[in-house]
Image (cartoon, one colour):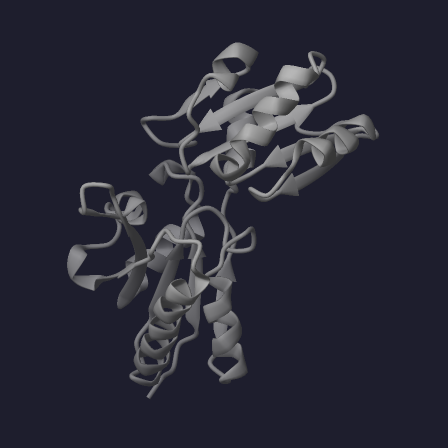
Length: 239
């Protein structure tokens, strides 16, 4: 029997056209594709990943796993343990298994826990690169993220106004991902420092995508989970 590595496939920011050719080929050849889904406020199960790959992967090859949107990481770990068990089982059955990951699997993707466990269990894995949401965002807004001696830094949703101010003062361009978790800190920074430029994005790569650099609009907006911003101490150059 031929055994295939488990492939962790990065889907990109959200639009099917922003997937790589390698990703599409891998989806077409897969026997099983595991995709994440979350519960909405009305209780329905929603999967952005399923929508992204629908053109290249029929439903009978999908295995949907529900990720609880909770700070309790133990509940998430139980889901990942189940995914690990399934990956091991299907791998030893000789199936081509793909684990689909929104964005890029190397950037703040907790599913990497499963990949690490598989490698520890001597199950071969492959990691396919994708377009990160902040790269797609900069392209959409025609921004040059960093130039000359500027430094680019990426922060998760635990950024605070003091840290952001210090980074911006030292010629860093700052990307804040998972922005909804620290939106009040960013809004406080924008209220206090008029020279700071903020480009704000929601649902990058999706039909509902939104972008603005209007300070007042950003401060007054309730930021959803799929939001990020790009901060600089001076206007970011357009391409």
